[in-house]
Amino acid sequence: MDEAQAPPPLLLRWQGLLPASDQQRRRLSWLASILLMVLLAGLPFLTRTGLGLVVLACGALWILWASVSQPQRIGAISAWVLLFLGIAVLATGFSPVPVAAAKGLIKLLSYLGVYALMRQLLAERPEWWDRLVAALLGGEVLTSVMALRQLYGPTEELARWADPNSVTAGTIRIYGPLGNPNLLAGYLVPILPLALIALIRWRGWGARCYAAVALGLGAAATLFTYSRGGWLGMLAALGVLVLLLVLRAIRSWPTLWRRLVPIALLVLAGLSLAIAVTQVEPVRTRVASLLAGRGDSSNNFRINVWLAAIEMIQDRPWLGIGPGNAAFNAIYPLYQQPKFNALSAYSVPLELLVETGIPGLIAALGLAGASVRNGLKALRSTSALALPWLGCLAAIAGLLIQGATDTIFFRPEVQIIGWFCLATLSQVGQTTKTAQANR
Image: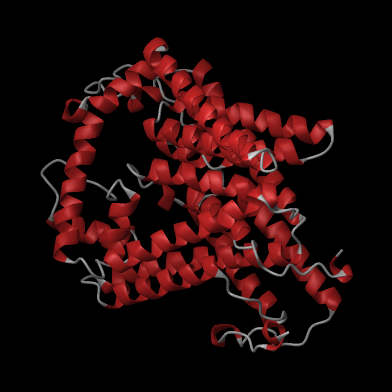
């Protein structure tokens, strides 16, 4: 009773100040749903200008919707997001290139507008999660088809991604409408566990066939990108999801079986992976490139960029150089080794340290920890969104694994999917408004 009567947080007291009828709020929810579906379906196809306009529209719509809706609890995930935003603001203020850092801060604020709108929609209309995923899968299916068709077309364009100085010289890699095999893999990795959840969750053969096609095409396209980070991310995302689904399914079994079954699954997965590495030629080649160290040109490039990034961190460990690629591009040339130009640190943890320093990395780790805690609650939850929580947790696991050696996550085609997963996980423990007027 005390919690229900407690005043809203100071940051949210501007919400609900404008009068609006139930019908007007329903219209806003429908408009938000349609706008987010357009955004998620069009991620691989919208131009940067078009994507920016849709993202800005999402932020503006959230401000309007929040101003006529009662404030909700902030929640652990949103609290860590706000903390990271505060650190980014400080990093911008103390940046050696404040104008460039301000551009990155504006981008971060625009993405947070999308996150806030997704969170608001799922809090008021949780049934729209399935429709948003359906739109996301629609864009993924078309992207995967366009990418896989490249296997049967002229190879001259694809050849520019075949590094003659790499262990994998001669490998043809597809990239679809995104123009980059690693970006295509980064886009697909978080979608695959969501497609598997849709396959399990949806009813009707048509819907399930749609989810199955999206899962199959997405997995095939990821394989043919020959992205090492993409492969590891896909294994992590799908492996974590299967393990979580099994743990949820056996939660009422005797203790002994609840311990033995996950161990048996892990052993079986390890044996399957070992067989693939030793017997399947493309997998063996890519693993050999991972183990080649500086003998592989891609590895050598990343190692040199990482060393330069570490020097940047040592010089500004507390607040970094400010958020965004514009700030990185302005400062990195002062540290780079000759002939090793780079647009990012090629590692999400290193990039966070470079841009926002140690506090920024701590906030990001806190956000990841809050996401894991929320996602694991779904193992025993009976909520209608329990399976989506598991799928989003698995998607984040895949993004984390791929992000260890790449910064594809910071591209909007990937980052917006990550914010969608966080918005879904932020509903754990929240009071969901499902008034009859919204149905």
